[in-house]
Image 1: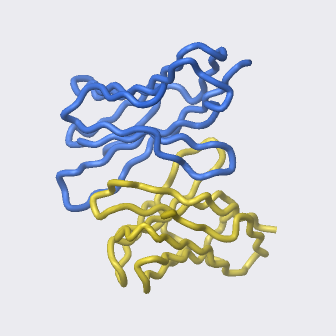
Image 2: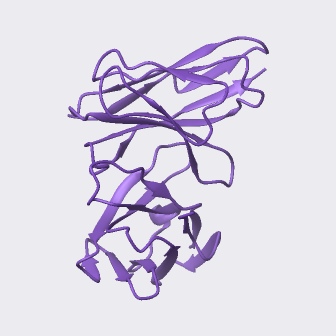
Amino acid sequence: GESVGLHLPTLSVQEGDNSIINCAYSNSASDYFIWYKQESGKGPQFIIDIRSNMDKRQGQRVTVLLNKTVKHLSLQIAATQPGDSAVYFCAENRMKTSYDKVIFGPGTSLSVIP
Amino acid sequence: DGGITQSPKYLFRKEGQNVTLSCEQNLNHDAMYWYRQDPGQGLRLIYYSQIVNDFQKGDIAEGYSVSREKKESFPLTVTSAQKNPTAFYLCASSDPRGLGYTFGSGTRLTVV
């Protein structure tokens, strides 16, 4: 069945460095991808999304890259700050259908070293 | 401001009791969802509802029940049949295609 997975369960980064969080998905029919940030004890918050007709999208300090050939998604955080410490989830969806469940990956825990 | 409100933030349940978790949204979203999150794990779908008076089982519906009498509300009942209910429960809502997915702040349920 389809699944969304992350390559690493944990990631430690020095403050000020760039972070790269990876995600693999298996369903080529997925056409909408989202990254969420979840801080301890809180609900996930939307960071950035990307549609399958794009391969890159930039936000404030964040960039999402989509490689449909290898079914890979990544989140890049520039100049990582202590406030970026959280669990990051990728999620996939299929917009072409009238309804489909969003599938979430297991998450990557990002720790920022001061 | 639009958003999703979950209550209570912390809930304690005795063995054999049913408890109900509240979820209210004012985003005018048609679809609502309940997820369970265990330490170090991803989100697992319990139930979802696309419209009022309709809901579907997710991947781990056993021991849970829901209702959707109003568009704004999607309460989750954790019944005594749920053998391992201690977890963090998240409610979410979206448009019918899953866009604009918004989460509440969660309820932490502990069995005592």
